[in-house]
Length: 217
Image (tube, rainbow, N blue to C red; front, side, top):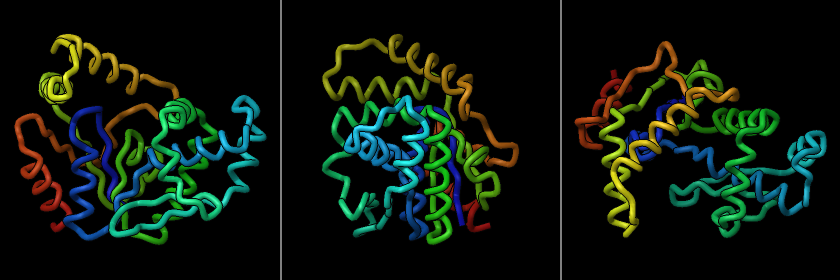
């Protein structure tokens, strides 16, 4: 069983995906960790990212495995726990760039399907219900107004001592939405059969209860 959660930035989908998995006692598949593990492989092997044949050959020959240890997802490459490496700024930056490459997205999709065959999963992203798992048993589109998302992000920045204005945060989210919805590769959009969960005026627990109630029905 796959529960797909898509939606724009700052709507709460990552938090809701993790909590849904915990509430249902199933696994949450963190796709970002897979992209970072791939960035680790390509960096370690000094692969020219512009040589797509070499990229595909390297990744297809790599032994990538995922295990859950005390409920935490761990990505192994050739038996090596990648957690000490995938949080490095260089790897995170490369992962963001590599995630826009069609050939790499296809390989990640194959990995996701491999583990969906082994586990019941909650997976969040921007194209999970539309492209990666169009036949997912449950699809949710987690959204919220621009204002409420900007407020959440702004409050986080302030708590972290960032010098930024609410308008700057709001404009950044508007720009991010536009880019996500209009990019050529896997744009953000709501699947026709997705259930919309608007978190604008609800607490995380209230939104979570709505999701669980739909699934239990």
